[in-house]
Length: 117
Length: 114
Image (tube, rainbow over all chains, first blue to last red; front, side, top):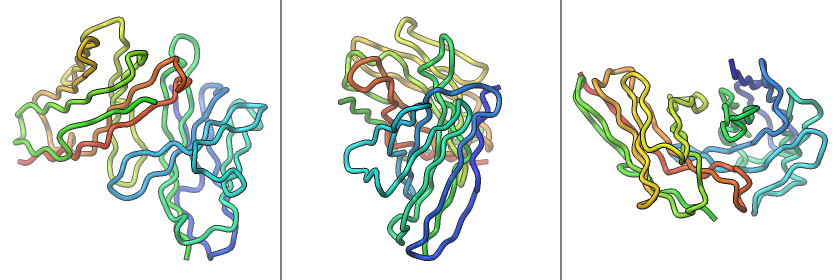
């Protein structure tokens, strides 16, 4: 149980294009999902909290118009990197919060490697 | 906000030895402390967690201890195996201003040598 998937696993795009990453909770409903970014040999940096049916909450310094988040259902959240540039190249990871007595537990997806040329 | 420090940044042990990774946190309201294992190119995998109402938890070769007074918690891996080689992250969260968001440590690269 508690499986989170991401698609695509890897994407290479040209500078100026937009890229959409999907995060799905496969066997549980997640009212809250989180999006993280991780640079090589560094820790995970929280970008935003995605709540089903409402606007995402962004961390300080993260541009909401640059990183569009949609949480349209209890099992799907999407992150769109708009007008991507080489500095946006990173490993993007989502997580979904557990349910019931374990709403503090986060289960992570396998990550998406974004390379912007 | 919460601040989590993690040590050491790298750790090499011989197969069969024990490995210990330590973390400290700053927010006394934090009440949930998970540990994640991340292999190269993959997402973090939850390996064990502990809540503030207990002081120790064990799952086979892995154990976590929590000292609320000192605000530190540790991961213990016994009988290490080569497949334990990975980056390990500690994290903390609580119901305070952080809203149950996880704050991560900086990670420990564990290498288990044959």
